[in-house]
Image 1: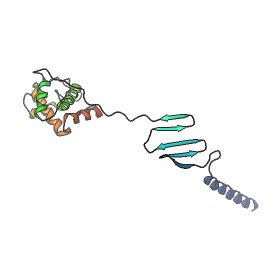
Image 2: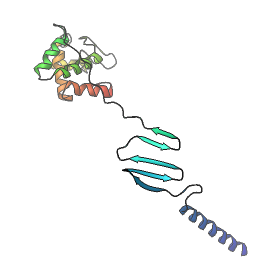
Image 3: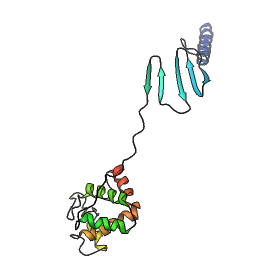
Length: 186
């Protein structure tokens, strides 16, 4: 009977010790304090401190070391300038069609970059794994028949279909270019 009493008393003291330890600060650390100093907030603990300025200066100091967070990634850059296309080329046809829609040079630049990536402006470009075809890489290529029966060989037919697709799905060539930049396809 005596051993049960001692065991119960010991268990109670151990439990009380764990509860008391959870409320006490760890050994070797001072209590944390927050102070305002010239518009910045400082959290001081012992010999270490953390400073976070209201303007987020991206720097964190600890002892003799400073850790600087990397800047955010740069925004996606605009499409490179395409310049003026050679007369009679598929790019010249597209240049005129882009202007007819009221889109500016920036939209033409995006279109050139987009279709350079997709087909290199090759009217016969085919993707054997997906079945995409032509300058805009229509999937399937036969969708372009809605614009003309000569969809397999006529750059004008393919460009008309491609600009309609871009306009309906992305709004503008730069919208399609941005999507292509983000996903690798449009």
